[in-house]
Amino acid sequence: MQQLIFGLANGSIYALMALAIGMVSSTTGIVNFAHASVVMMGAMVSWWMMVIYGLSYLPALIIAIVVSIVLNIVMYEACVKKLGNLQHNVGWIITLFGASIILDNTARMVFGTEPQAFPYLFEGKMVTIGDANILLHELMMITIAIVIGIVYQTVIKKTRFGRAVRAVAFRPSTAELMGIKSEYIILLCFAMAGAVAAVGGVLIAPITFASYTMTLSIGLKGFAAAVLGGFGNAKGAFIGGLSLGIIESFISIFIPAGIKDSISFVIMIVVIIFLPGGILSAKIFNKNGFASEKV
Amino acid sequence: MLKVENLTIAYGKTEVVHHVSFDIKQGSVVTVVGANGAGKSTILNTLVGLHRAKEGTILYKGEDITKTTPDKLVRKGIRLVPEGRQIFAEHSVEENMLLGAYAEKDAKKIHDRMDEMFDRFPILKERRKQLGGTLSGGEQQMLAIARALMTGPELLILDEPSLGLAPIIVADVFKLLTEIKKTGVTIMLVEQMVDNALSISDYAYVLETGNVVFSGTRDEVKNSDDIVKAYLGNI
Image 1 (cartoon, rainbow over the protein chains, first blue to last red):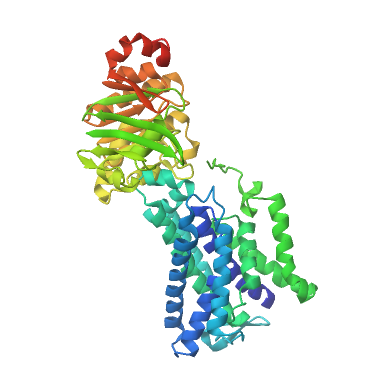
Image 2: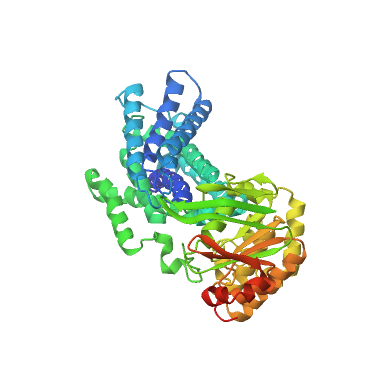
């Protein structure tokens, strides 16, 4: 039970990262390699607010969200928009990696190299379910992640804005013919991804400790989760993230902790080879499905 | 209504349209014909703001729209039905039409227009919950036109509406365009099916490698033996 909750909690962070990576990639077709750094920034900023300025959890989180949104918008304007057509220009691979290195090193300069303890939600209170002691914080991680996922999915499926996002994902120029400002929609997706990054950062920080390297391995697992679930798909992000978290957590009972991290990447490689579209692209999920032609 | 002067368009350094001028009168149907690669689609994409002109001006109702972005042009009443229809494959028919009305804020107007479209295209009403990508080519063309009409445009531009459709469906499309013309919408058309297009047109331009080589009324084009032989085949 403890393993399951722990796996789900970690998995929900992977899912949040995969979701945010998907938000950006669905509309632009690019993969935001700097996403993990924004997650870290979100965590560090809120730590700073709580410890240095003595703010409580919620205001600190809100400031972190604002900072992450601004970071992501600046990143879009500076590293992505200037490149023009992203299908023909793969410069974003370099610019976004560069942005991530800049963010990491800025964090190192501003916040120092020492990993900092980050407070748990509810002061680390435990609940007992069966024979397992479970941190309320972990339950909150799962709940918040799932709520974000459901809200995002609902917005995307049911609202005017969501329709526009999907239209831009289909083809930005066609969306513009409908009167949609594709660039603006893409910018909003970057902003939303920033907000989700900050929430993820604050939730994971008590477990990893807050430091400029806190998202090194988590960040990569976020990508792994996105690949597992298929890019740009909220359901897929959660299936990918949660299953990765659970597999990791159970497998760590049997194998040494040192090679635990490699498991997710082995899984990722296998999935890329056999199901390039992610788990959800498997035939059993698409009996009556309609495979759209992406032109 | 639309006046294009000295329009030059380039992709990078390659000029594909050279100093083209033409105008479209309110309420008329104008066809642009020409071989593949003559620059027809490029001109249309430039008119709706998807591509930037290198030189020249585009005037719409006397206003310079050469540098206006596509989303603003939609709000000004210019709509393009793009080549190959470009229906949003994973949006339902209804959602495609709602996207068509994206520029319209008034919910009641959207609702009324939707009803109007469903009256005109009963097949779309029948399939309103179906995904756009599951429609047949003809249905997709109807949807593409209905989608563009959702904002009540004054100038409707169509890029090869007959592309890939069965002849009987093509006839339907052109009949539909005649009906749309009757409602006062100005229509600009690029077509390979020249005889069909000319039959509903008031005026035609013939384009060759980025230059207008001939222009005239429908009858003038039909009576010009050279033009007919060179560009239009047997009609």
